[in-house]
Length: 411
Image (cartoon, rainbow, N blue to C red):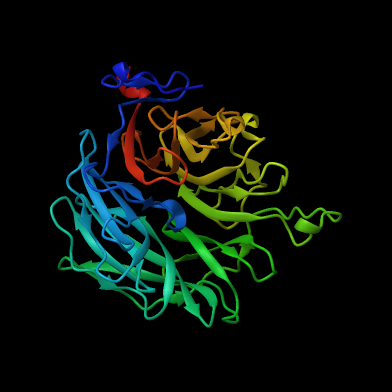
């Protein structure tokens, strides 16, 4: 497995011996001269980093000003330093941003602000004035972009303590972000809980949405799709029901949470989430794949390898590149016995025989807490990972970034 090398080697690319990338030295996203503060990468769908044609953008929440606010930073893909970050939010408090790339080296970012959904357009030199996207109370926004221009926002509308999912197309007009009227993903009463959506477009313009659903009294994962402005399809359940009849804790169904989606070639969609079907070890990284544009999904399969079975995983996500689908998460398998329980960032990728063995990411593993990763894969197949580094799980943190250059580019 890959391990962090000594500091003397950090000026050179760090070779991931069995992974399909060679990793550069990690860099800071935020100026370390700022007073200690806390960062969060907890948005729905884990869209905290997006690669454009020449640059990438990172979005996050931190409390440097005494209240949670949303920030963004941009860097050239091949450069090793970020431009100074900018604050996107303008309210009393803001949470859980998401970002997707547009054509022309621009991005759309969206976030929760003062209990509503807001968004703006970002490029390497400026940020547009934020626009309110939701018509009322809402939270847990995610985004999906098709060919860089067709962008949809998905959020959970809040009403009387319940949450229902809405989808709204977004338009860029004269450098202003505009929103069309939102529509419900599923019909039914407003007493349901639907939350933490993920969304992606497939090759034929079909929008696939997945989410957490608690109408049965426990959390299940569902998905639905639509093409153009057509109604959404009847929902289908993603996670397999595993409820041991003799186990009171799981009689209603095992826990699942934080589904993420990625599009692959043609009509392929990969879903990855955290699944507690093995109660002895806590959450593990599981997934399911669709080869018909989200109309149906395969049987569930475990994404992580068996070496991680004894401990729980967190913050799983998925993307697609030239090697196929790739998943990242954090877990503490290397230090669970030393009482620190600090995590490392791990990666697994698609192979001809299934998911690869897990590899820890150079620079995002070792002493202290290295967790809450988010990733994107650019058009050249390079992987870009951002995560939070802390001296301990509860101490103030640092926002870190590393690029893995696709091995085929060295050949």
